Image 1 (cartoon, rainbow, N blue to C red):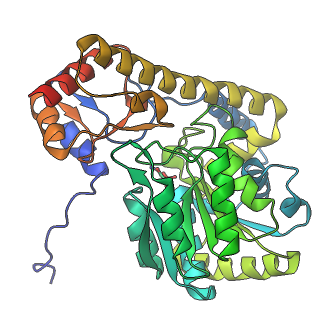
Image 2: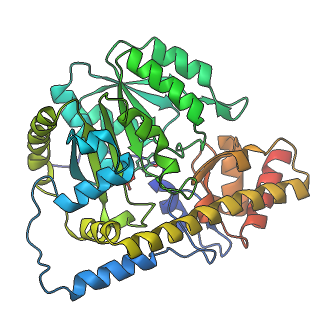
Length: 400
Ligand code: PMP
């Protein structure tokens, strides 16, 4: 009965790893997937995560019962504070509802489904380009996806004018997806001044901001600095949605731990919104997993673990920033034609190199370096040892 099923294409991002795994070359390098690697090229489990897990294992009162539909209450509260700031008036006024989600992706999906059912405007504007899963998540949520200009290939920076024009001509009430920090794939973020400009425009047109926060603390090394964009919106009295992921900033990728917060106008609205979020979640996966959320809550509520986390987080962010400098220097040393300053200017896990798909294919074939065909490389997958190999490959690709 399934003989007619045609083979689906590989996921454009996860498919890079599939191709990498098949390559027998000892020099192969995977810069496709956004997962942190140490200088030795190994995945990293944070020390604080190990400590939190130890505490959980040693606590005999811990059981494996189902969580409520909305997840672990303590985790939800702490997550909202982490992104919105504990002194945020919306939190103090109980106008925020937070539900635990299946990492960032699941939180975006629950938010999308809620909006499709209960919000009057079904169109969501996403940046051009954006994380490849965004259009699929929101289309399947029942929203209609449109794009706004974001990246300017000529400057390899923000097309701020285009962004303002496109959001300015969006229908009143439209939903706008914003990357809270470390825009994926471009590594280009608005300045704080530009964010303020965007906020005024969004509010004056009654657009509904939906933040995707997948990299809090990972961009600058500071949890507060990376949450500024969200906080200026959440502090102005208006509504917004935020999807959070702990995949990168706590290295909990496979634990699938995240949260969706909806900032409402009143506490009463927030509680009604939560009751409807439960109706979205229950038939989808019933309730979320307990382990990852318990790890996060253990870390966020303990002052020592929290402080230690911020140190480990900063070390990851700093290593990525130093990879930017090393790659930039290596290209300069080689005299590689072109202006590569965007490598040090861009923010977060990725560099949007500007290499085209032919050059990417050449680097994969000749140098066994794997990346998405749009030329995005994960700086977190690089090390001092592999930078020269990558610089050689880029040099060869652009001088070919
Ligand atoms: N949003 C963006 C912008 C991302 O880059 C990612 C991870 N690549 C996610 C959301 C979701 O990741 P996860 O579901 O693993 O938390």
